[in-house]
Image: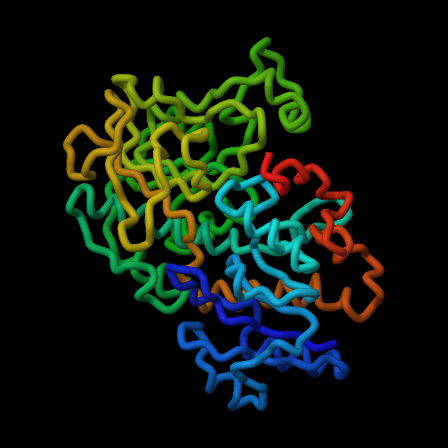
Length: 400
């Protein structure tokens, strides 16, 4: 089995990589039959020399490999027919801008394993950068608050080296007695929580958050039934919400009345009610001043996320009265951070974490006959066709 680590070719450049040099050495040590080639790259967070110094083969030509590992979408003209690829294709939700990519994968008889489709037998995702999105997103939320009120200036996360560096910068700042509400208990939400805990911010219960005043900054982490309620008033548990989201409406208004910063790290399922609505933002008693929408669903459940921002320009203002983007210096605006590729700001940490997950959950499947079905479930295309699990993409792939 020959594995190839591809050069990231998407613009803007992405410095992350699936495997660090150390993880590739581990792969070789644990699976002696594996052969590895690393494609030359001048943008990767780990330099070519860091691979070659460990005895790894870095070359301009990896076309003889069987399986290729990348992070972002691979340009169509760089795809090699009749090979196997792992990368985030951003096609499984029928994203229109990548329809031609899926069509090319089928035409070139490529087997695609999308990182997003690597799940266990209970359909829980095993691979992703969500934790690092939460880490950087929380940091950016504080950076936005410091800028908005001219309290402090934090350096961009991309100029720092690690999560620990981000926490050190945060701990140096003096914050007023603000309240932060954090949604989500998945990898994204827990990544953001790591930052809040790392800077020693006090966590309080939902009831205390809503009713008490504090002399120090505090946060609360809320679950779906904290910010959604059944229309008929019953309380039936999380599973009822997941099965019957149409029977619920947002109950987030009570948090909007007391929170200064909203960090959105939730997963928003199809059919679930909007969380932070235009009406809530327009209310005279809305206290929210900064929204760090880490989940970043444009025109989705967070009304002020009218666009995805960028690492270069991470912040914009949202004017509730007109539902429009304005400069974040506008006195009536809410400051919004909605960068949709946050882990790119912490490429070393993100790559290390990703590689560890990949080694644990995916690589063994190549050498144990895929006994747990990891590869079979993740396979989107094969033999020039969509696999049965992803047959729902047929109309999308056909251009309909």
